[in-house]
Image (tube, rainbow, N blue to C red; front, side):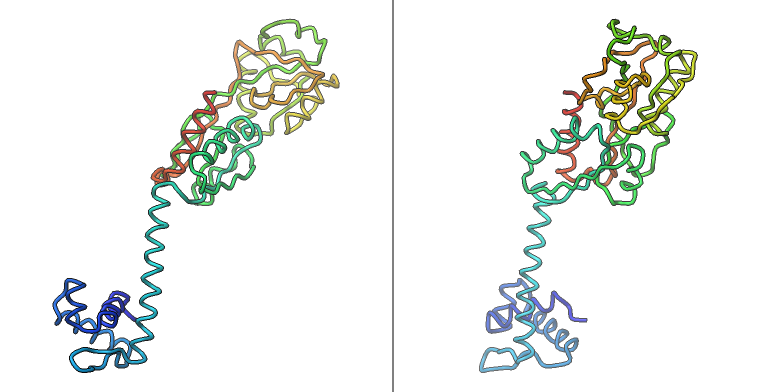
Length: 297
């Protein structure tokens, strides 16, 4: 295999016209330059230089390698520039996994800010389930995932999770329901009601089940839906009441009334998950900061 550094020495000799001049430009001794060229000729299996008077000129093979050495030098310079831009956060690509209710409320304003601050960074957001994307981060298929975490969830080696927001569940009642006139609803008051499920099994449903257990009952689900718009439609039709997180109520059905819940208040905890090593990327840190600020807002 040809040594790229020796090719650059050959290029210096050819462009300067002599071993002595090349040595002066490179900061080598003439003997060291001659040794490098001789070693490259051995690798190439053909003569690369021929003497002409007091100088040298390239053979056909020497001209060929000199031309390739110039191309290699250009590519290396381009790589160094691209790497510097990536280190500085001026360019790059971020792959993000998120779930539906945080898309318009947390992710959209964060991405808008990132675009203003880092316009040449490409972001690839992909919708997924709130408890699914962590393996994508672990395996390097995603740079950041927005997930719902439970207090019982174990930490993962090499993964950093940062708290973004505690999203409280609220009671969704049919308009005209006897409890709709209250400003605040105790969870125990919903124990005898038919329920419309708004969450699939997993970390988003568990806060509801645990809170109901703490209030002394298990919810009687008469209908289930895994999207909040349909759950609100079921409630508006009079099938039952529901609990839906605040971030999932950005679009409200006109046929429902929404009230906060207490004693206890079910809450799902939302986190951003990234690989520890990825925190060196300025663009990723900028996205995290934007998500934190969007969550505060």
